[in-house]
Amino acid sequence: EERVRRIVAANPWLAGRLVVKDGVTMIAYDAVEGKDAWVDVVGLKVFQTIEGSACELGLQTAYFKLPSILEANTAAVGKGISIVGKDEPVFRVSVISDVAGSACEEMDGVKMDGGIKNKKKRFAVVTSMPHCIGDGYTFYSIRNMLSCEEDIRSLDNSRCPSTDDKIASAVKDAEPLKPVLVNLMFHDLKTALWKANDMSVLRLDVDDGWIKREKEAYLAELSSSSSSCSGDGKDRPAFISTNDILARWFFKFSSPMLGLMAINMRGKVPGVSHNLAGNYAREIPFCRRDYESPALIRKAVEGLHRAASPPTPIPTIREAFGTGVSLMTNWCAFSKEVKLEGAKIIMHLPVYDWYRQERLNEVSHIAVVYRPRAGQTSILLAVPKNELELYAEAALGLIEWSCVGSFTNLL
Image (cartoon, rainbow, N blue to C red; front, side):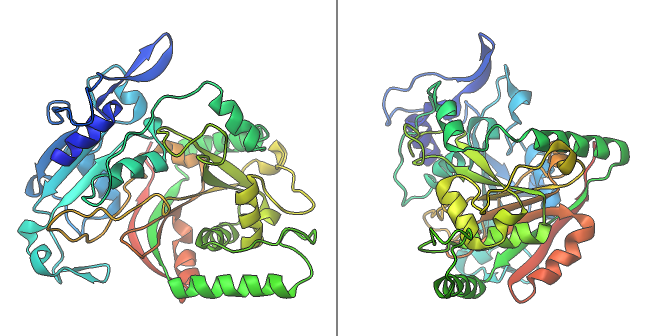
């Protein structure tokens, strides 16, 4: 509780409420006199403790049940528009005690030793924030401060009116995506009429050995080739990242006419610094020739523009109509292990309301890359249910996989 108090004192907007002023939705909050000021985080509904026995939360709880459990116990804050004009927080940390374990006292290959093996000492820390006030970078910057080894700092939640124009200029494909919007509307209609968006969620644990071999193979291929990644004989990448390898794998396997990758624009655009809270991520579109290799993806990320040569055109409305869109985002660079005195982390797991989020009908495949614990990379995948086994088979020998829940999207 004291740690949350200090975080909110440094970032008083976390204790604010969403309001509408002059037609603009914003966060209203009281000023705090200094980082050491006392803040009533319990009274402001920013911090709470919950008995685990009351919420039926455990290590074996099916993933698709987590959102409703957390919502029912107020551990999850409301979604943007639902809390505008209400006395509801935009940020909350909940400590859930007595979290139930498994019969074998083991989860994801990590044995729970010492005090953690005793279920009465096992607990969950739930950090919740609506997307409307922050992107992945904002969320993890705040969450990381819960660690006793992390400095508490203030993030600036103000926004310069010219920022969006600067970002749009940097990401050269911000305007030509009308075909995507039309296609997404078709997916909404298809789901509403035929309940066609029957999806599954699974988690893949990435094999570092496979990543290393893939990097070495692609770099060796580039070194021995007279051509570059884009086919124009120039601009060979100096390195290939894990994200490049995973993005190529995901896009090639889902094979969308258009793939989208979310990019954190902080530090890439003048005036958009790493101290800014809010939504500063933008999507780079990839056509099929743009994700042929990890090197092409690397060049696109560095240049904020798809990199195939000759350049690929954005699909027309006619070409894109009825096809799926794949979306990938990577939070690994933002996440740090939260270390709490006297505790050992078992697993970090992003929780999203896939089950009732109708807007996900717009996207046929989603990949969220994250760190469940220090030194490990995992992917949460939301894919059509009839493709679940295909992803599992494709991952064998490359990525360990486990199904964390399947669902049929309900309207």
